[in-house]
Amino acid sequence: MFWLYLSGAIFLVLFGGLVAGLTLGLMSLDQTNLHILATSGDEKQKKYAARIQPIRENGHLLLVTLLLTNTLVNETLPILFDSLFGGGGFTAILVSTGLIVLFGEIIPQSVCSRHGLRVGAFFAWPVRILIWIMWIIAYPIACLLDWILGEHHGVIYRRAELRELVSLHESTQGGSLTHDEVTIIQGALDLSGKTVKEVMTPMKYVFSLSFESRLDRKTMTDILRAGHSRVPIYKETPNNIVGVLLVKNLILLNPEDAVPISEVKIFDSPKVCLEESLFDLLNRFQEGGSHMAQVVDPSSPSSPIGIITLEDVLEEIIQEEIVDETDVFVDVAKKIRVIRAMNPRIRRRSTMDGQNGPNTSTTNQKSDLLVPGENKKWPKGLSFSSKRNDVPEHLKNKNPGLPRSNSSGGCDEHRELLEQPNERTALLGTSV
Image (cartoon, one colour):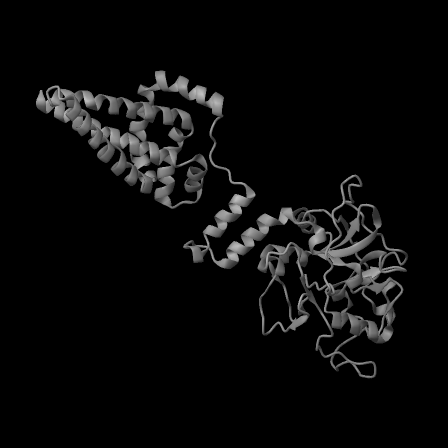
């Protein structure tokens, strides 16, 4: 009987340690983690996760089964050791407690905490059998826990938690993500929390042209020096924007002809609310209607207070200023002009010093492009239309009158207005 009791005690110690380790290992693998491993892990991880997922779906049933089994083992061990030591109660308790703590708790839980996926997958079928054996007792308790605490469907991170989780995976913290990857992911997560008023360009800093203007040499020179790909067109006052002129459509026009802007196609410019989120605005830009929008106040939707472009939204995602060959970056706080060639990558101030609003912008201030003066000839070899009638048909404005201004997606007049935006002391620069 001695060897029988000894064999039974050793078996229970090892079995109790296995159950304790599986409790820690399996319960640390929530359904979210298993789903990620099953879909994006390597071949072994996919196989291991597929084995564990069926038994992990009902977390309370698995937990109750393992805890009941471990409790039965721990309560049976002192009885066996008492018989093994011939009634030495104190000695039996001391020995059984030491063996349970060392071999039944510390060692197995240390192993399973590091290799829980592999160990859990290897013992998936024995755990299923154990659940079936304990079903009569474990299932009612699990149902009670589901009713009181609710079913457990895995860990779902909030936006702030997910943002911090991404930062912990940066390469400087021992992760595999570069700083730029972390910055872009965090910028995308923050996009829905930022509004148009934080990044828009106020109207007094917008380079625009009158609807009655002519595309003569002076106007063409101003457009070229501005360096923008889109120019807002207004009628009567700069606050009455009627559309957007695409600069690329002017490439075949001869400045000597002084073609009226009214005869060139003007594209619609949608209107967006001051408090609209940048995420919603990005979705609207993706519809392909326009890459420039008018920003309006709900109290006066007919008069824009600024404009915003797709480039402004993209800069908030990558959290860097997008500066092209003709842009000059201006630090508004220090009034410092920075040449792009010397500083190819410029961080946005809002991400550098923790300020709420952007205090930097991209502008074009009399860039050193080769632009013919009033008394200079245009370079030879350039072919321009010599007659106004040679303007391509698709560039002509089909309706020479007041162009139709797109006001779709207007404001909710009952929505509470946000504060007025911090003005960026720079011209709008867009190269989208």
